[in-house]
Length: 320
Ligand code: MTE
Image 1 (cartoon, helix red, strand yellow):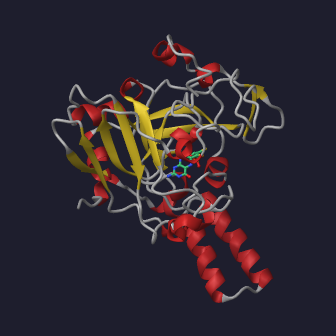
Image 2 (image 1 turned 30 degrees about the horizontal axis):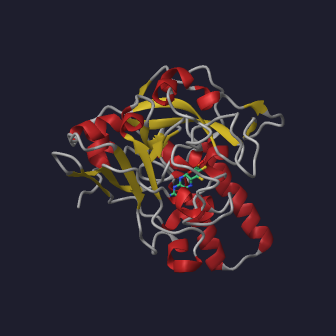
């Protein structure tokens, strides 16, 4: 087991009581006094507020998305899909304090010459972290623009030396009912666990495919998939699996969770495509979080130049 070394996670005094946190604490105290709530409820709410503390990361800024207008940290961290906690978008931010992202061990294995275990600390200390601003588009029709911090997935995969049989990559989220309350509910849970996702090997090695360990300058909030999650900006958001513990190189296409649940509505590829509607939602337009008006959805979420070549000979109506 590997643990995080403090040196990589510098928390300075002003970050501990950032303006944002200070205001939230003040608002909370006002709210608490007015409502005269019980001390256990106060403790629980304070724990949620305290989880706003996040350590800063050292990273290099890049040109990716430099002209995009960012969503705010509050928007990106309080409107989440994380079924291990809840189906409600505002719930993960309140409940995700049960997720313990340290220590954390990720296994890279399967069709590789050098199977390995790496910790978050290894990633942070072995690779220069970079910031990439990407568009993020959910299949439900909302979108946002987020400054992620991390490394390309290709960096990690190359280290394990894939064999010629490695045609796909299968990702798996942590299975731990103590950390993820919905996993305790077994067959009555929101979805089957653990959450699984997959990419074709060329998609996994594409320069845009990113493993994020942070956002907005600091480590990931739990509700956004701490300590490490995938970000595949030209695909619908459900491909961006959170809190990953296993990266397995495999020969056959893995069955991803949403395809397992409903193969008519969700496929393996899930490329953002304004011309192929989801059976329940038109994909022609999208609403950016915080915007009143909708915008036209862009093919491959605006990343056609970088990724279009990978799907040249594929019928994208069939391979949803
Ligand atoms: N990963 C896990 N383990 N569990 C989930 O429920 N939801 C997916 C994806 N990754 C999900 C997940 C969906 S549907 C979306 S849209 C994105 O996470 C949301 O990421 P965000 O909360 O950071 O916006």
